Each structure stands twice: as C-alpha cells, then as structure tokens.
Image (tube, rainbow, N blue to C red; front, side, top):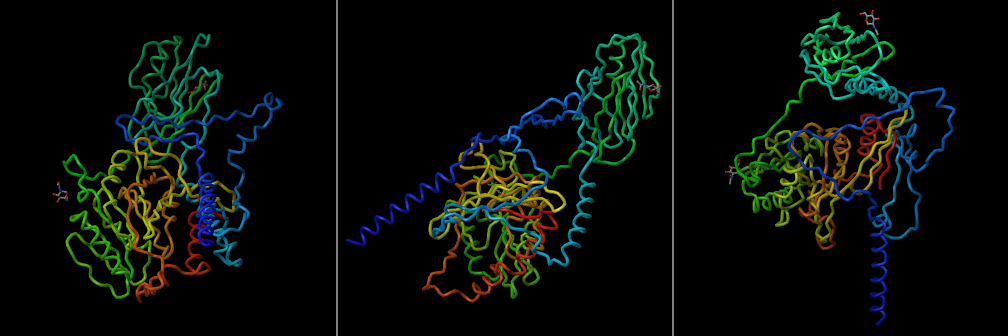
Length: 531
Ligand SMILES: *[C@@H]1O[C@H](CO)[C@@H](O)[C@H](O)[C@H]1NC(C)=O
Ligand SMILES: *[C@@H]1O[C@H](CO)[C@@H](O)[C@H](O)[C@H]1NC(C)=O
C-alpha cells in the first residue's frame, strides 16, 4: 500500500516537473515559420541599407529619449559572456531547466604566453579584415534634395569588362547651363552614344565631364554613360563620384567574377535515387562490431549506396563488400581528420554523415532529407537519433557571435532553433545539429573539419560554418544509436574500453585546452556561453 502511494506521488511530481519544463521551453517568437524554398527567377532579397544621420550642429541640440527595449538590441561597444546563477539544486535540474554557463577561452594558454598570443592573433585578424573588406562595405548616403540621381547599390562589372551605368540623371535646377562630372579610379568612363547639344570632355579617361544648356539632352546623354574596368583586381569595388555645381554623390561598382558553380548530375529519374544522390560517410576507431552493424543495417534499406569509411585504428581490419571504400589513416589521427578525409572522397551531390555506432531502421528515410535539400535553399539538414531507451534527440543549437573589442568576440550557443520551415512542419532552421545529417557535399568540403580537433568535437564545425552554412533539422527521419548506457550484466569489450579512453578524455585534459585554444585564436573569441 505504502509503495503504491509512493509511486503515485512520484508520478505526480514527475508530471509537474515536465509541465514546468514544457512551459519553460515554449518558444515566444514573432514568426512561426520561415520560407526557405528555392524559387526560379531573380532573388527578391534586398539588403536593407543602413541609413545613419550625418552629424549636424542644428540637430544635435534637439533632445531625445532612449527607448531601452529597442536600444538594447543594438550591438554594444564590446561584448561580455555572462552565465546564469545556479537556481534550485534539484536532480536533473540541468536537463530540465538548462542553465547558461560562461567560459573564458584564454585559459587555454598560460599567463606567460597569453600576451604574445593576443598580439599574434590581432595581427592575423588585421590581415583577415584586409582580405575580406572591399570599398563596397563602406556606407554611402544619398543626401536629401540632391538633384543627382544615381544607383546606390547593385552595380557590378566583370574584371576588364564594360557596362552601362544605370540610373544616372540630373533633376530640375533652374540654370542656364548644366554640367556633370563623373570620376572613377579603377576604370575608364565613356559614352555608348552621343546626344546633340551635349559637350563631352575627358571621355575614355577616368574623369569625364558632360555639359549642356538643355537638361533633357543632358539626361538623355547620361543614359549612355559606360564604365570599363581597366585595373585587374577582382573582388574589389570602384567608388564613382558624381558632381554638379553645389552637389555631389558617390556610389560603388563591384568588380568581380561570376561565382563558378559546382553542379552534380543526378540523372534523369523523377523520383529520388538515393544511390545516385547520396554517399554515406563515417569514421571508425576500434569499434568494428558496431561498424558492421551499421553497414548491415544500411544494406537492408539501401543495397547500392556508397559507404566511405575513414579508419585510424591501430591494427585496422579490412572491411570489404560492394560499394564500400575504406581509407586507412595513421593511428589515432582523430575525429575531425577522419571526417575530413571521408568527406573529401565523396563524389555525389549529397553526403550523409553518420557515427559508426548508429544503425538504420525503417524510420531512416533518406529520401525525406533529400527532398528537403532538393526543394529548399538549405545546405545541411539534420535528423534525429533514437537511444536504446526510446528517447530521441535532435540536438538543435543556435549559435550567435557578438562583436567584442581587442579581447575578441563573444560566442553564444543555446539549445533550440529559429523558425519552423514553411511546408515542412517537422523541420526547423537552426545553426547546429546532431551527428546525423545530410549536406551538400561541396558546402561541407568548403567549411571543412579542422583536423586539429582530434577528440571531442562536433559543434566546432558549425561554428566554422556560421554565415556560410544554412542549416535545418527534421525530427521525422530517425537513426538508432547502439546503447551507450552501461548495463551491469554486460561486460564492456576490450575495444570499447580503449575507445572510451580516447573519445571521452577528462574535462581538464589537453583535448579541452586544444579546443579552447582554437576558439580563442582561430575564431578570435574571448569567451563562450552555452546551456
Ligand atoms: C568639372 O571638371 C572640370 C574639369 O574637367 C572643372 O573645370 C569643373 O570645375 C568641374 N565641375 C564641377 C562641378 O566639379
Ligand atoms: C540509381 O543510381 C545508381 C547509381 O548511379 C544506378 O546504378 C541505378 O541504376 C539507379 N537506379 C535507378 C532505378 O535509376
């Protein structure tokens, strides 16, 4: 009787805690879904131009009130990483109410080497900024009441080629004579046609002057102004200046090659042929029984899909069979080195990453993941992993980077996602997912897995990919995970023990130091927060 009451009490307690956890994680979002579908035709996306007021003496005397709720959203001068103070100390508290913790990354280095490290990082960062910034990044404002009309954005020329500069015009000004001067620095100006009653000076040079007493004729002439890039320096921009008496304006012309695509031929079939579209990549280390289970399970559903295995075991065993490629690596080369090698050998449009201790079931429908990538602009989509206990996880993470000053930026990682994907109710957009994902091969190869991350590493790939990888996650494509929970009546095999020693080193170890050191130097972070 007593034990029954105890059970009931326990059940009530558990339900209360679950309801609280549900409320706690309930999303409060303005948008429920996001439309990331691939569409034909030109992209409608337009960059929102930031318009800042010019400093003005008259304006600065007008008082104002700060709206804290909005001003707080603007980037601060320098960032900080703050953790949450520990709440009630219940068992499973971290699982149910994930608390944000903060970590400083400079601890990866001794105090003696830190200063030196900071200076070297700053030097590398300056170089990086120089490589990645162009004149097109500078803010240019079209001033109010300027009679000059010109393009503010979106003018582009291929290196050493010619375009007509669109949108040039002069608006009504009561004058006897109109002059417009145009100046460029990386190319020459000219006219593709001449208009009567317009005087052209300096055509074919970097400074051209057009004048007329007839505004209509001058405006007609402005429609034929051409720009020819003459200095070969792709991925830069020319700032073009436009002047008339009392007014001036400037705009940029981007100089760049078109992006060369990398396309994969997926055959004539209408329905998805997984063998033609997907290669399964995995990395193994000592766990051959698990790997064999994975291969057997794949073959049950996808008998002809290619499997690429990177293997850095000490005494590698040959895995043979049709549609299998095994790449032997030096002993203990590591987790990310193996992922890199495996992914580098993929020749299909998509690569599916799986861990070697996963196995396929009837719920592992790769066609669904292919469908998401075929019909949206996403680059990578994760699935769900089901544990032996029946619990499934998608391990969705959002990642954001807050700009900091000389100490570096702040990295923030949180469990969760941004929006549900329109038309795919089981899928969301997020920044990081679990070790089971389908991705565009060329995008994964571009981001790469840093081979310096030898042991525990996963989200580091998504941190490196932030800004170039567009990530989604679907919970209706499920792979199973061979049990990790140690049951007392099952003795751990010798290879499992050695594996555990390599894969799960203690937190204070060199592996953690390497990881923090890379976040600190390579990614230029000062600290990170996560829950
Ligand atoms: C335009 O350029 C000519 C020289 O080519 C110069 O004499 C004239 O002052 C300039 N006009 C304006 C408005 O800048
Ligand atoms: C699917 O693709 C594979 C590999 O390209 C090919 O051998 C096979 O014939 C294709 N199957 C169908 C049904 O088209």
